[in-house]
Structure formats: C-alpha cells, structure tokens
Image (cartoon, rainbow, N blue to C red; front, top):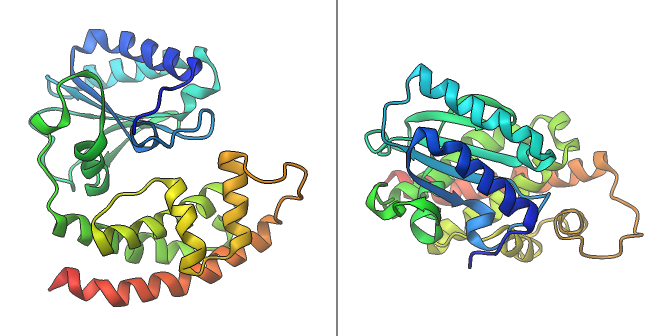
Length: 258
C-alpha cells in the first residue's frame, strides 16, 4: 500500500514536479519503498521515473542537471532523490541504459525487470499517465532470469570484496536483495524490505546482522544497545551470503536457462 510521505518528502516532491514543468513530462512515477508502502523518511531513497516526450538531447540533459542541482537547497533529503528519464520510444528493453540522476551526479543505467514489475504492480503515479500505458509488461521468465543473474554476476563477486562489507549499504542491500530474490523466484512476488528482514532468519541469515539492519532502518530494538562491530558484521554477512547465493544459483540458474 502506498504511504503518505511526511511533510519534508512531500515538499521535496512538489518542488521537483515544479522544476520539471519546463521539460513537459508525460509521466512521473515512484517505485521502491515510496510506492510499496515501506518508505522511511531520511533513510529510504526516493526512487523515481520520469517519461519525457522529446528525445533526451544534450539540452535536455543540461535542464535535468539544473533541476536536480536546484533541489540541493531543500536540504539533505534531496540527495536521496534518484531519477531515471525515459521517453515513450525508449521505454522498452530492460537492457537499455537511460539518463539517470543518482548520488548527486548524472549517469546512465537501465530500468531493471524488478523495477519494471514494481511499476506495473504498485507504481505510484505522481503526474500524468500510468505505467501500464507506456511501459511494456515484464514476463515471469524475464523477471526470474534477472534475479538469478543479479545474484550470480553482481552480488556473488561483491561478497569476495571484504572492504565493501564494512559499509551499511552493502550489508543492508546484500541481505535484503537475496531474500527478495528467493521469494521472487519461488512464487513470483515482490516483497518489501521489512518483509525480507522478517524472512531472513528463517533463511539462515545471522540474527544479529538482521537485528542491526532493522534497528538502523526502523529504529526497532533497544536504542541503548551497543552497535554491532562493523568488521564482525561484514564477516557474518559475507559468511552467510556466499554459500546462500551459491545454493540459490545452483538450484535456479539451470531452470531459468532451460
């Protein structure tokens, strides 16, 4: 279920939509936590898609950069607003890279099958047309192929890089994404981060790491409890994820290729 964002988030989104007027967007959609009902202000990213009518020319890129840079004046919440820009002619194809503003700079990245399925299942329309009329649907096979490939080709190599796993974002996303992939491949559902955290202990994930993520994301638990040492936390996360991903890919990789 969509959540009603707090006043700071609502004000940021309003200012963003005003800034976009010169670009005459066909549609603006939210996906991720804001659309799925698990948004935590100041913690969650604001994941957005904008569909523009015109070709994304150099002049459009400059305007997009200007819109996002202007948001900086609203405060630190603006740094969590990430947005990818499509056109009706470039919306098809999950491998196509699109203009994206994220982490305070422009880049190009695809709109993954998971994001596309989110948009169709519970995307939040902030302006204009709904996703169903502009974005091709995602077949179950394409979604399954993607989540297995993501575990095998992105997350498994990342587990080998110990230095990454002292950072919150790698621990949080690594465990949550694995739980989500398991549920998606087993029954086709997309689940929230909260649902993933509820399931992870049953999947064999270290309970102290799950509790650490929950405490930081939802402020659950004893606020006076000492934080888990980041080196130990990373070792526990990697020790779980390496074998878990290997087993997942061994069980499901051949199925998605058959």
